[in-house]
Image (cartoon, rainbow, N blue to C red; front, side, top):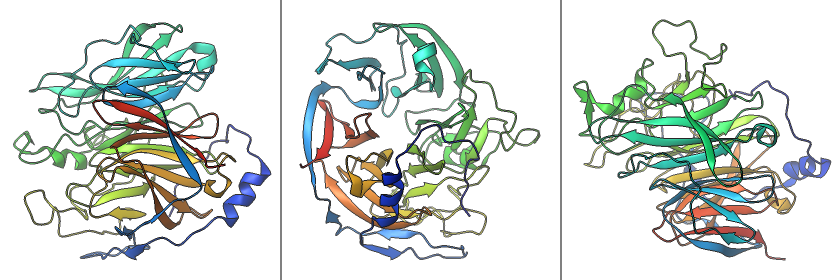
Length: 406
């Protein structure tokens, strides 16, 4: 069963988009993922290696010199704010990457996978000038993902305010998440990692088991008001055995999350360990199984769990084995690529490409094809001009535009 958020859609879309959504399809290379010790109303699709290549586009590098860029957001004037994981906020403005970082970002825990991560504008940015960030702070022994907001005056961030911090703190520099997705009611979803791989432990057990602990934020998606407070209609509000902020749980490490503005469906991509990466159509209040239910293998060999499917766990729409290491996810609704309307675009760190995932109007996956980038893809977004934009996770990271061939 699909969860559809019952809020009004806040954008007007042309009739041509809706007609095109019904007509676009292609056949991809998929097999059904096998289930053990469980059943599901629908099987996930297992992506194969011999994908066809997408056609009808060209790739342009519009700037480089970004150090491990992680997230991006467009300002009303067309400028792009870009986070760099070491702790800098950059701006691409008037066709150039400005040399000086934007002032006002505090020190972050930029170790291993941690640092300055996602960035998103408040839906009413034009009125309130608020910009939101996810980032890690702390030490190797005790660190956590945080959410903050600040006002941007065009040159610097002012009034930086921490509005949410993950509890409990964790050791090591692994699995922070963390994408921000705004819902139409101006609440936000924030994806949080499970804390890391074995042998990392918390309270005497593998830290990844925190994803099944409803009193822990680790391995969950939380839903927050724009000031960091907890919405009264969150699914576990009033449950003494659960944290009020949690919207879904049982996640390993979501680094791609987006909303389909046509149907208000939330999608995510999630890292498995060795294989078992997932594309999920998100449902409020659901347990996504990790690590009790998984298609992943351990890095040291053997299965993470002998159970890959269970009736109470939503089945992934795609399982990627071997891993593509998905990061960045965009729902495409512009008419610039009319054949791509209504499709998802997922970046791959290991696969070094962008996966076009063809969806029907009900949200079923029809096929998959590859847009070769040749670098680790960290983020994918649709720009206000209808083009797709890519950030590559390199020491000399690139901002890339994908545009129609003609």
